[in-house]
Length: 147
Image 1 (cartoon, one colour):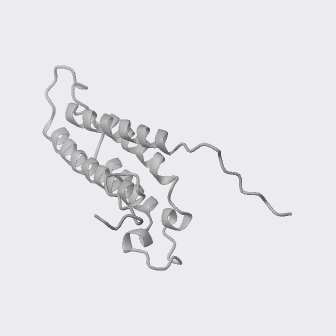
Image 2 (cartoon, rainbow, N blue to C red):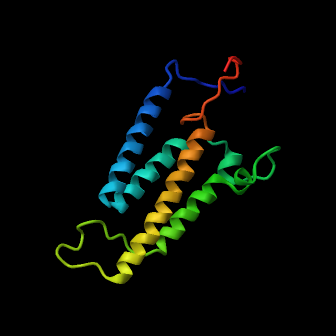
């Protein structure tokens, strides 16, 4: 029995782009306000939106695919999970204002600095992935050679 491929009559592409745009706006807001836990949660939501467009080979890092970059061979999922591991070992999130009137300790400040750098790298990874999937700022029209 042959299985039919079912496609929606409607594209949700524009809705996805609008959701991702709002997630990016939230990320920038949470970053500026020092809300690292919320920033991380929004980056996870960006990952969920983007990762569904990865092929199974790209997602899991299969080496069977021809002409893949080293990044793809390693697997986007594995790269993403590396950020999660690094954040896990960077300490607890102490978001702005979470200590009330108590001053942060030196260790807390060092942890926050590590977390900030990891979250920046995670956001850059996701932005580059978004571009690679054709949903971000880098776009090339193969049909129009005039530019």
